[in-house]
Length: 442
Image (cartoon, rainbow, N blue to C red; front, side):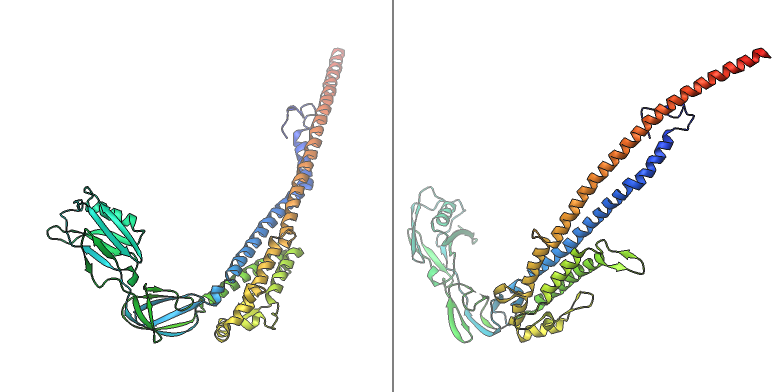
């Protein structure tokens, strides 16, 4: 123990020293301070473990929310024989087979200027270009200083996105020609050009798509059709026949259920590890004897295994609760149930209209135990925080009392040492006088 009383022990010839004070203080520290420090360390371990458990619950909740997505239960897959169309089926699509026979695709109208120009900056000459498309008309005024590039820019700016103008180099003398193209396909998008400039038709002009759907004649102005079958987007690609099969796709649901079981079991194992007691090794989990963790685990299990109103349980859908509290998934049983009655699977896990299903209950229970103001895990976290603050204050107070006690002891030792030093000095003087007196008498 260092201090300003650096000569302590000299007067008492080491009988009263800082070494003795340090030894006494060390013994008191072990008896008074160390137990509090051990409690602080245990509290920190518990807080860290609780954070781990809460992360496991959060990971489970993420998967529970994902499993509440209706698209999982209604996912569709398509198979095609032929390549005249491409099909994208959403979860709203109905299962079934269809035949598409594409007669012709929807096309754009394209027109090319009769006059060619030596370069793209050549002047077109003053005049007016009158354009008509889909019930709209536009007059493009060309000044004497406008180049072919300038006129292209005017057309693109003034036709409200209906006509796309560009310049093409076709080769030969005066190779630069202006090209007008309808922005959209379909017969209504044919372009009429009149006025002071002449254009030639390229191809057959804008045409509607023509195809049969299960033998029914259909026309559309575009090659992408999303209003023929609910939940199905059809893209016409070429002339020809394609047979389409739309069927249930259970792969994503099965993958999601496997992930759910994995996350649920991780959480159960984490909870069990933190509360168990090993009789043989005489070791205990950090929360052994604490009811909060067991209560949380029990609440989550109860929410999952609750029987539905029609008497079904998780076992009917391939989920079995094991003796250790974990889940085991029978994929073949769940897949068979999806084939037999996919709606019953969705109703059990998501509930009617996305409410009151097993996963809805789980999500609500997770909120109750982890987030709500009186949730067991949130309450446990608050109790640990309160204990940590109390122990810190207790440690500070105990340390101050101990320091004060030994500071007082050091000062008392110094006073005693001083008295002893004086007594020793007086004794030495008296001894010297006696010795001198005896020497004279000899």
